[in-house]
Structures are given as C-alpha cells and as structure tokens.
Length: 282
Image (cartoon, rainbow, N blue to C red; front, side, top):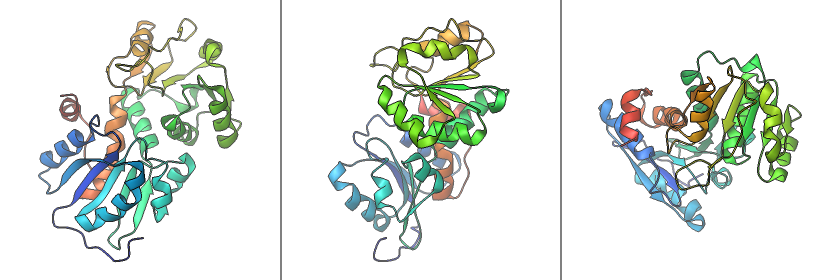
C-alpha cells in the first residue's frame, strides 16, 4: 500500500501498462467512451520496463490515476504488487485491471474471462455451455482466463491442446480433472464432440505463422471463436463458417473486458456496440 492516502482527482486518469505498448487498442476504446459520455478524464499508453513496474504502479495514484489495465509482460508480476487480489485474478494467476482506491491501496482483478464470455454470448446467443465439451487451443495467459470462465459457466469437459504439451499438462494439474489434455497433432480426435472450439494462440494473427487445423470432423452445430482480431476474420473462422458453424471474432473480447475497469474508474458503465468497434478498428 502507498504510504499516504490519496483523494480522487478532479480529472481522473487511467492507462494501459505494457512493454511494448504501441500496439494496444485500449486507448482508442476508452477515449471513445470518454468522449461519447462527455466524461472528464483521459486514458494513455504507458510503456514500462519490468524493473520499473513496482515504482511506476505505486507512483500512479499520486499522479491522478484511478487505475490501469495491464498487458504483456506484466500480468503476473502485478499480483505481487497489489494490496488486494480478486478471487478470479488469484484463480487465473494474472491480473489485467488495477483499481487505485481512495486510501491509496491497489486492487488487482482479471476481466479477461468476463470479456471472453460476454463476447461469446453476444456473438452466439444460442450457445449452451452445458451442451457439450469445449476444445481449447493454447495454454498461455489467455487460455488460463478462458479455462476458469468455461468451468464457471458449467462446461462439462474441456479438451486442451498446446504445441508444448507439458504446459497443457500443468494447467490440467492446476485446474482439475474436467480438463483432458490431447496432443497438438491429435486435436481432430476431440473435434467431433466439440460444442465449442476456441483458439487462444497467436497463430493466424497478422505477422504470425498460420494455424493449421483440419476441421473436417467438426460438427456444423459447433460454435467457433478466435481471440485473434487482426485479421478480424481469421482463416479458422472462415473455415468454420464454411462448415455452417456459428463464429465469433476476437475483437469483442477486448472490448468487453474493458467495461468493468472503465465503470470503476470513470463512474459510468459503457456499452459495447458497432460505433465502438468502428472506433477501435481505425
């Protein structure tokens, strides 16, 4: 905790902390909301090196900041800095949202799982979490948040595949027996049972290697979502749509995960709509 209490600034500030940070679209999103609702405040990108993270975060409340988002590579490290960690951030093992309380304390939360589920329900309103297993590709930070969110939603079983199997095995050991690890090269074995297929890797993103996965055994009633949003329509989503599957792009996860933080910082719950999507995609 900071050694002196703070008072809420007349012009509240928030930002996104990462290294690098120039690629983040969060400033476009939050600035759009501030302008739309006529609220005083600002949201800025903050490039912070690992060795400076503790000092920077503890200084922010004194500079008029009411909170911040956190992105790669700091999502785990901020848990050690925070005075209070939410149950879901503790379960996921990472935080993406910081709230600076009026007494100077730092509260860490994780809204990635919330953002994922809100986007999925908006894009696939008929998807039933209890309708069958999910297949999750990847075992990184995003996968951790999504695994917790799926379990909380009541998904009965999760097939997890990662290019490095030991990382997937580690998540199974951590999160429970409802997760079944399958080899990356054998994902097609799990696809016939899938009610939901999720790509949490960067494969298929602009500038990254392609995601090679054969969807021939995927049932047309399955829902497919990709957390990649550059390009918005990834090859995975195109292939799934061609099979008749409902598809959900990854941009909405970014947009929805920002809602709780903005509401805490600026006192207004914002809407995720087409105008916001357009503002972020410029």
